[in-house]
Length: 287
Image 1 (tube, rainbow, N blue to C red):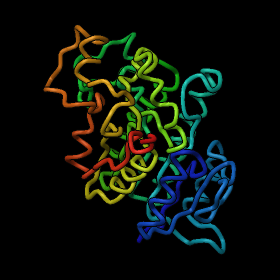
Image 2: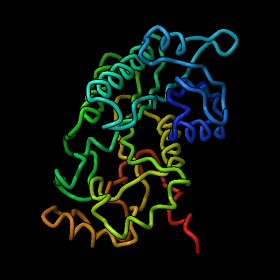
Image 3: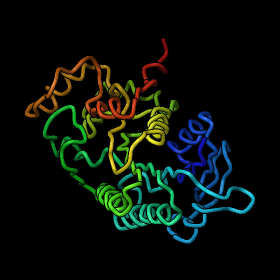
């Protein structure tokens, strides 16, 4: 059992993460600007742009707790185009620096944070990947201010781990986060695959994203590492090999593609973290 603070615990992914960690027996505190619609853990309002607030929240809060064992950092403007470029970049990079620096000051040795699939070069239809399925092994290719901030967050995490060799900092490159309520519209993607070619038709069920967070917290290791986190399948009913051949005809396929498997490789997360997606949009379709 650990005391885990979750920034952004009121968001779509955050709610699932809080629920997963509470179910696993951890003592969870939700740190967010806005309270959750349905409280699942103690909530404390927090402005990630204020380092003093972050440091206090990572050390002690009177009548709530006297220490923190681990940090899950999800609080951010969650994608490009949701504010001006400068606002997205400055907000997200500053918030993550405050989280990393406050964790170090509070002697917290475990930090898991939300990186992003955008570092794979999204939109992939405009920037074809070097191979499929894409993975963590080729250099990041940020194509937006949002992705650039995520890239710098990963570089920053590596330096914090260099400063403190006992620190574990794991960045999870989440695909497009979905909740069960989002799945009703998925069959429409088949009418025009081009609508979702930008991220190779990938997604992540928020509950499986939460599983990845829990596994990253429990992972026995130190240093900085990153993992692509997606669902096991695509948003399409068409075979992945067929989609790849049509929309990425010049991109090498590194191994045979089976059925509708994801084109964002989760092999490393499976191998290292023990990640095993349990949810699919197909489970929510009317029979």
